[in-house]
Length: 327
Image (cartoon, rainbow, N blue to C red; front, side, top):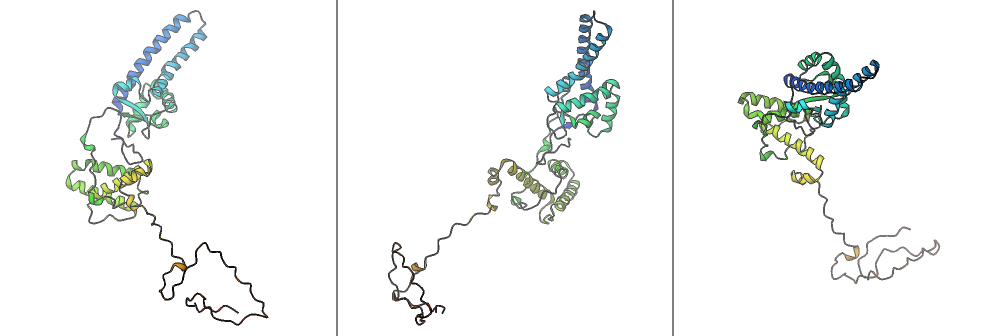
């Protein structure tokens, strides 16, 4: 299975192409390129018979470069990694991250392919593909590409069971940033294939993966939660966070996390003004209208004719506050 992993810990359902299928695709491409090169060479010989040998040699070299080097580069660039031989064998050239290749990738693969395929009759390319774990030749290594199979047999083992409903949202507070992508891939591959494993082997693998995930998150796995259910719940939380990060707050409500969002408290009623505080009927007095003009405070007396200090007793009949003005 391919080792390509996206940011959501989803493994691309592609398999690296091996040496036999790649060799067959290269042979088909070379057969077509050589046939075109022979036709172009015959046309040049007939049309340039009157030229001197140096011009004929220059035209032959130009035809070789354009047909056997530039032709495959142009075809791979325009077809996004699918030459005639690769289309016949169900192969495609992609980047290391699974994306489509561009001109620079095809250029590097084509220039290095002249040395490892044309000049050495494919010996270097075969040795590099046998040594590489993903069957890559030197051109793929320097260009950062990978040849994968597009036509793969359908398998029902790709279904990943959802976590139990009682675990939904339980691990929303975990810090999953320290968990690497290869560990997420191992968890996903275990969950999609745990039905095919032996019960004891599958349980031991689940315990090991759960311990690795818990060690990266910094929080121990709950003892009452089975390891497979813990892995499924944590992986679902990871995918839910990636979905919210990609699609914004619209998916947050669908993921059931809107309840954890802090809600602003309702604005409280404004406190009553001191003049609106209810008082006993015996001391209640008419409250002046808000539109009544304000009374200017009296000017402060001079020190010589300061009146005698008295306690604050209101004139409207309400009880005094007992406050003594400062001297």
